[in-house]
Figure 1 (cartoon, rainbow over the protein chains, first blue to last red):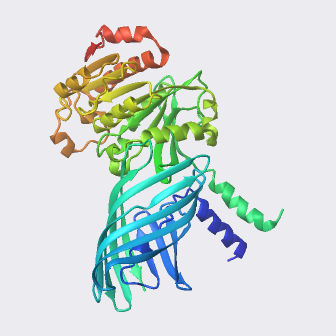
Figure 2: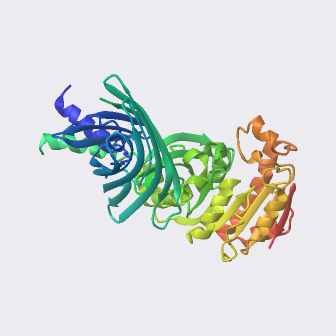
Figure 3: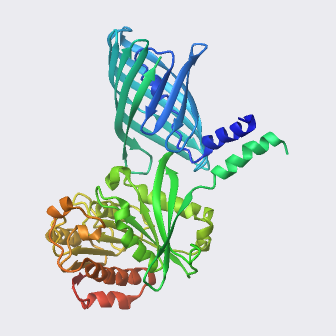
Length: 187
Length: 291
C-alpha cells in the first residue's frame, strides 16, 4: 500500500471522532508479568509491550478509533511476587481529543488485592483513571472504579477477563455511572 | 505546500466535519410538512461520547425552515425505554416549529447520566453551525423546555430545578423525586400530564408530586390513557403491569397533543389566552387542574 496513503488512513483513524482514554488498562491488569498483551474491551482496544524494559501501552477506543500512548509501573506493597499480596499501580498517558479538541492527560492510580498462583492470577481493586483536558478551558474527571480481573496461563500464553464499574465525578455535574470490561490475551 | 503536510491535513479536516449525521426527512400531516432528523455526537465529562437525536422543522432539502425564533425542547427517555420510542412525540413537536433534542443514556437509564441533557444542549448551542442544515438557527435561540416520561421525568425535573437556562418542565406520567425539594423554584412553569388508567405512575402519586410544585402549574389527566401509551412499540410484558388503553391510541395522543401544544404556546409565545384555555378545562377528554 502506498505509504503516504497509509499514513493518511492512520491519521484519519487517529482523529476520527475519537473518544480518548489514554489509560493503560491492559498494563495494569498484567498479573502474570507478560512481556506483551492485547486487550479487547467494551469501549477500547489496548496493546502493550516492553521497549528497552519500559512498558509502553497504546490504546484505540471503540467505536470511534483514537490513539493514545501511556505507561505505568506496578508496585508490590505487601507480599511477594506470588501468592496473596497488595499491589499499587501508577500509570499515565497522553492523548488528543478532536470531537471537542483538546490535550488529554491521564493519571491512573490503582490499588488491588491479588492472588498469583503458578498458572493463574486474580485481583480485585479500586482504580481511578483520572483525566485533565486542556482546551479552551480546563476540564477534569475523576472516576472511581471497582475492578475485577482473572487471568489464566495456557501453555506460553495468558488469557483473561476484566470487568469494572463505578461512578464518575466531574466538578459542577452530578455523578454518573460507568461500566466496562474486556478480554485479555498475553504472551 | 509540502505534499506530506497535505496528506496530514486532508484526513484531519475530513475527520472534524462529523458531529451531525443526517438520518433523513420525515413527512408530517401538519402545517409544517417535513421534519428532519439528525444524529448528533459530542464529548462531555472530559471525554465521554454523548449521543442525541435532533428533530427540527425542515424544508424539502432538509434545511431548517426560516422562523423568527427557535424554541428548544429536550426530551428525556423513560427508564429502560429506548429514546427512539418517543420519536412520534419528537416529530409532532418539531412539526410545530420547535427543535427537539433527544439525548441517549447508558443502558437507557437517564439516572445513570443525569446531566447528559444539559451537556448535550450546551454542546448543540456551540456546534449547530457545523451542520449546514441548521445555519438559520444563528442568533435565534428561543426558550427551552425539558420534557420527561416516567423516570425520565424525575431526571427532567432535576435539570429544571438545577439549571436556570431551562424555562419550563413537562412531566409525562411522572412526578419529581420526593426527596428533592423543588419548592424553591417559583418562576418556571410546569405541565404535568398523565393518563387516568396509568398503573405505573399512579394518579394519586402524580397528584402528590404536582402539589409539591410551587411554580405556576397545570395538571392534565387524559381519560383512557395508560403509562406506555406515551411510547411506541410497547410490549405485552409492559402492558401486563399497566392499565388498559381505552379507545383509539391515536385519538388519545391527539388529545394529549392538544394540551401540550396549548401549554407550549403559552410558555414559548407568552400567550395567556392559551393558559386561559387550559384553565377553562374545556378540552374534551381531559380533566385539567391549574394553579
